Each structure stands twice: as structure tokens, then as C-alpha cells.
Image: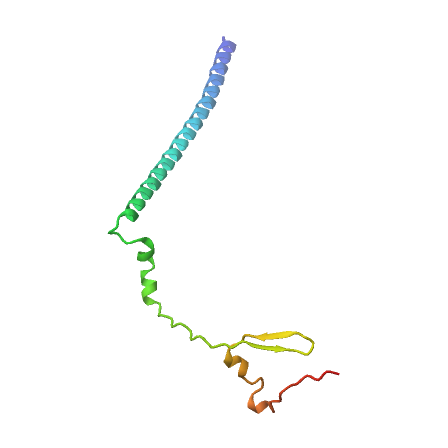
Length: 134
């Protein structure tokens, strides 16, 4: 009688362990399903918010009485930026010199740059350079 009772007790214990393992797996599957559903809800909500933003932004930019993004956003930067004066254009005269070997040198520099001295007054005497053929 003791051996039958021991066998029945072992079978019940075995069934309890199998049921506990099965229950644990079902709980894990249920948690995965809940997590996936939450992710899908979040993605759907994000997509709805994006669609709403696109609809309202397109609507606002189509209306003539609302300021455009560029005008509204950059308004303060344009107001604070000092007006730049246009640089004065320097007069240029094209100078051409033909060397003895037939090479033509064209000088398109501005008059101020072309007429300036290479050396300062305190650096010595300015001498005109002429090339001598040997």
C-alpha cells in the first residue's frame, strides 16, 4: 500500500511540474503578445501624428494670410543683419606688352595695383628693369 501511495504521489508531483513549466511558457507568450501590441499602437499613433502634421503644415502654407516659414523664421536674422554696401568697382585698363621673342603679356590688374611700387620708400631706390638680349 505504501508503494502505491508513493507512486501516485510521484505522478501527481510530475504532473504539477509539467503544468508549471507549461503555465510559465504561456505567460511568456502572453507578455510577448502584449509587448508587440503596445509597439503596434505606438507606431500607429506616431503615423497618425505625422499625417496630422503634414496635413496641417500643407494647409497652413497654402493659406495666403499666414506667413511663410522662410519669412517668419529668418525675419529676425534679416532685421539684425547690417546692410552691406556694394564694394566700389576699381577701374581697370588692359595693358599688353609683346616681348622680343613674340610672347604677348596681358595685364588685367586694377589701375591702383598696377601702378603701385613694389618696394616701400624706406627699402631703397626703385629702379626700372629692362631686359637685355645677349
